[in-house]
Structure formats: structure tokens, C-alpha cells
Image (cartoon, rainbow, N blue to C red; front, side, top):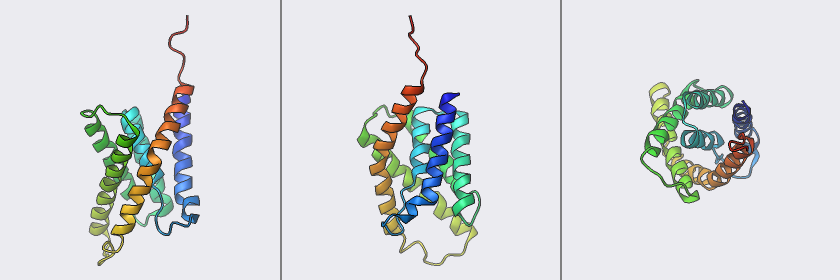
Length: 167
């Protein structure tokens, strides 16, 4: 129950920061995608049906607050969760460089899914040609933040975990 409350709080805080305060940073249109980092962390450390549903609802919450089409981020985060979970079953490396690289690649999976869905549902002529640079900078910024966020989440998770070997 404590881990559920921790994950709920972290998801709420990441959506809140991503949709409000991070837009005030002097980075221009580059906003680090904190929900993506949380989704990748869940897919690596706690792959279950409940965290997959949590990733979907976290994406849907981002859609409610900042997307013209409902469900785009929910689909993209679900796709990221599934692809990270399936690929991590075959990779056993757990290091800050690995997590940064994985989050960087997951950011491109998410952006690709969003671009495909937006091109289907919205008519945006040449809107993505200028945004490619900002997408790369956003993926890079979230890759730099990922090891720190992973460390903080695993530290909080270990602090809340019940003592198993109590004698």
C-alpha cells in the first residue's frame, strides 16, 4: 500500500510539474518529459498490470491538461511501457548510462507514436520539420535527468519496503 501511495504521489507530481512549472524554465519549447521517466522506471522495476494501467492513466492525465487530442499521450506511454518491458527482459545491464540511453530511446518511441497519431487525426503540414531539433533536445534533457530520478525513486522505494529478514 505504501508503494502505491508513493507511485501515485510521484505520478501526480510529475504531471503537475510537466504541465505547469517546467514550462516556466528558460529552455524555450524544450520541456523534460517526467512522465516518460516514471513510465520507464515502472517498466523496468515494477512491471505489472497495475503499473501499466498507471502509465496509461498518467498519459491520459497529461492529455487532459495539455493535448488537443485525448488519448495520444496515453497511447504513447502505454507503448513505451510495453516496449521497455519487452526489451528489458533481454538486457541485464542496470547502470546510469543504460537508463539514460533507454530513456532517450523511449522518448523517440513516444514522439514517433505521437507524430503518427497526430498525422492521422490532425492536418499539420510541415509542422514536424522544425520541431525535430526541439524533440532531440527534449529527449536529451530527459536522458540527463533519468539517472537522478531513477536513483531517487529506488531510494524511496527501498525506504518504504518492509523489512524482510526480521529475526
